[in-house]
Length: 161
Ligand code: 45D
Image (cartoon, rainbow, N blue to C red; front, top):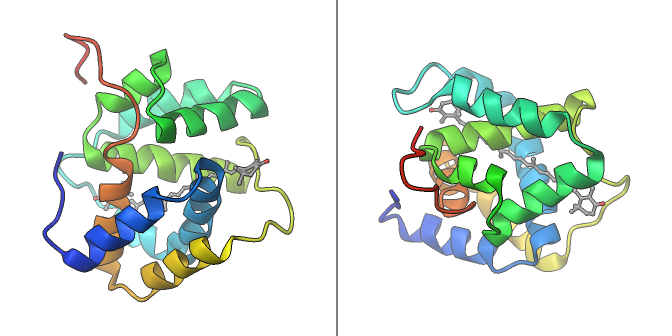
């Protein structure tokens, strides 16, 4: 697991992870909304990203009910062990980031369960959002990568993708 030496980033990731699961999901959504437009230009093929692998998992989640989609996302954060979280666990950090990015896009396009209207972040989560907003773009990406990296479950032996 590649983590950074950047103290600011490390501290923000810790604060993010210390929130309740649903608060993490909600905060992640608000971060996506903040970063949204800047993410596409950053997309040009990093060597460690496997778009087909991310898409394969996303397409399976997309077919599920809204409740199951939400459960999958909670399972990732809780490190619950399921077929899908193991698939996620086998991915590189950047591919994991791409899975989340695809989920957020799916929320935008209506294929993934949307945020409840008028959702209010807790003051703790708002503080983390402000800290993330204060980072340089590169640091934001590092923060997101370190955040999504430990999620999911250990892949079964021989299942690496
Ligand atoms: O009912 O090098 C609640 C790539 C409450 C390319 C809820 C990249 C109850 C290669 C739980 C809130 C693009 C990968 C409901 C780089 C309730 C590369 C639901 C960069 C319904 C660098 C909440 C990628 C839900 C980056 C469903 C920077 C919340 C990607 C879901 C960043 C939240 C991605 C989601 C980000 C948030 C994704 C899906 C910030 C996703 C955020």
